[in-house]
Amino acid sequence: MSLFRPDVEALQGYVPGEQPQESGWVKLNTNENPYPPSPRVVSAIQQAAEGRLNVYPDPLGRGFCQAAAELFNLDPDWILPANGSDENLTILVRSFADKNDLIAYPYPSYILYETLSEIQGTRHARLRLEPDWSWNIKINRPLIEQAKLLFVPNPNSPSGNHWDREVIQSIVPPNGVLVHDEAYGDFVDEPHKLELLHSEVGKQIVVTRTFSKSYSLAGLRFGFCVAHPDLIAGMRKVKDSYNCNTLGLAAAEAAIRDQAWMLENRAKILATRTRLSESLKSLGFDPVPSQANFVWTTHPTISHREIYEQLKGRKILVRYMNFPNAAPESTTNRTGAVDGLRITVGTDKQVDAFLEALSEIVAAG
Ligand code: PMP
Image (cartoon, rainbow, N blue to C red; front, side):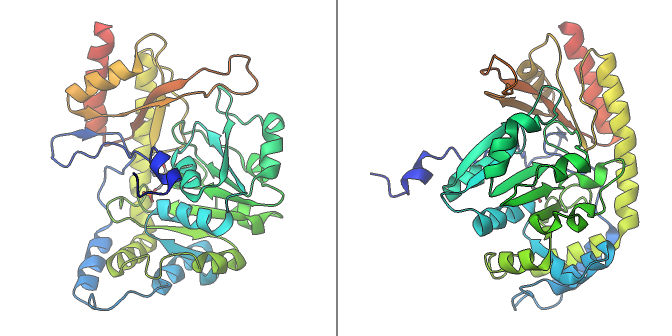
């Protein structure tokens, strides 16, 4: 006899990427930033640790909200801090979707959207992307119209492509909320400046951000939502009382105030990204032009899983991903799977080690 809720018993559960805890790996599998965070972050954590850890943190994280508000030229009540962007997504699902509601998301994309819908017990729908990663809005329109929540990672993961603002504005569900998941938003050539929130449909959009990628703080677990204060006020009722801890709040505030540090690392990553994509092409791969800190690629003949295994044998970790039933509605063959490799843009040295190993694997066929 299981003591679990039947739907929880049936859950597969979200499986995060491999996180080896020992050193010696070239780790290009979960889109972390290879460069360290700002030194100001480290001193902010030290200072906070010497302070008042015996008392609870500010439940609203007002210091951080103020810093984010200054950066975006908004009032602080537009900001909701969270314990990683994954918590943003949990808060959103809890706030807006009950079991009769539909949660929709592009597919292939971030699988956690589906897992959270299953945990909440809502209806959910995959909006299958075209082979070139574009939206077939006409075919998906009926599901978009029904959606209470539509999650859109932009740039998308695993593909790394970026959809134009016009596309996003045209898919806001008429009676629901569009979540513009900007986990990788700082790596776009011309990053959004929250224009979506000031558009006609802005009151139905929530932007989510993370400190795990561009700010080099995946180990910290910090993210935040930006949205109209009416939405933020409702979401506050749903979050855990003290969802962000004292050290995380201090660190995130220092990080967001040091834009120069983030932008310098971003520039290095963008330069390495170009080199990685070009090198993949010269090895016979077919990378998708990326606007993120990773590159999605396929090879016309060699098994992607085999490449992943061989790299792993050399202590190089990339992400092998397989999305069953990914063929879009516009095709007649609806059973096709999409699989490939997602490679995080590391330091130049890490990328060189990866490319050297990959060229040996390709040469061996
Ligand atoms: N959204 C997307 C699209 C992601 O890839 C990730 C990272 N896995 C997240 C949200 C969550 O980021 P975090 O919880 O590390 O802030």
